[in-house]
Amino acid sequence: MESLLIEGTAKTPTVRFDANQGLVEIKGRSIPENSVDFYRPLVDWLDRYTQEPKQQTKVNIQLEYFNTSSSKCILDVFKKLEAIHKSNHEVVINWYYEEDDEDMLEAGEDYESIIRIPFKMIEIV
Amino acid sequence: MSFNVNEYYLQLNGNDVLLSYIGSVTSDIINKVLENVENKLVELDEEIKIRKKIYNVLVESLQNLYHHIEELPKSVTGVDEAKLGLVVIKKLDHKYKIITGNFVKSARIKPLKDKIDKINSLSQDELKDMYKFILNHQKLTAKGGGGLGLVDIARKTGHKLDYTFQNLNNDYYFFNLDIYVS
Image (cartoon, rainbow over the protein chains, first blue to last red):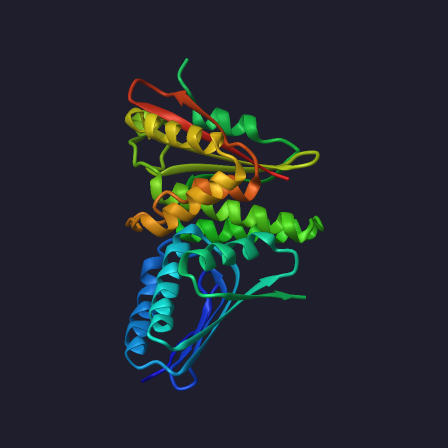
């Protein structure tokens, strides 16, 4: 399965989805006006990956900002990961937040409480 | 006397203004406003927590304008831009004030007012629950966040949302929203 690599912009994050390594990584800013368009290929890729996931999938989410339009799309990403987790494959989620960014930590806790996979909260100092 | 948006905009401008803009709210304008404010806050040596909150709130309020501005004729508004929005950011003594404005049809007042009053009546914990509920249960609309923007703003700022509707004529009002960050 081909990797999905997207370079980041001022409004959209860098994406690195690598099926061979079992790596799902989103980094940067996610504040596009129309987030659905941006996230559609990510969700589609995860749909395919869900068919044949690695025994362990490592997820790194490191966002500096995200808007409410992205927040629903990010939940869609997590729901796909939840499906992988439910099919008895290990999913490790690392949620990075910058030092003292309590809003971003809380955002991670919101997702954790909705999708019920434990998050590892990592403060970047 | 009916409301005049240009006079109102002039009134808002003063020494305390960090940035002000009136005109069409496009994706490109949003980029420019965000970049400009981000740079100014760094120049002011503002603490990172406040900078991030302002940035977040500004993204949401500008994108609310972007998605919800109604197209109105010049004969009604007195201005050339059909999709006119206003944003002014002021640095006050111990806080920042973000003012946004746009024209709305009178039919939209009640739902908008009900929504803001509801948000203002909630505690931080209740806002968190409301945010999570909308996030998990409501479909994303073509217009974006499906009503999360104002909830997110109230949650991140911890302040009540101040608003007014100023009458332009029987059918149209100017919706003004004041957001405080401290």
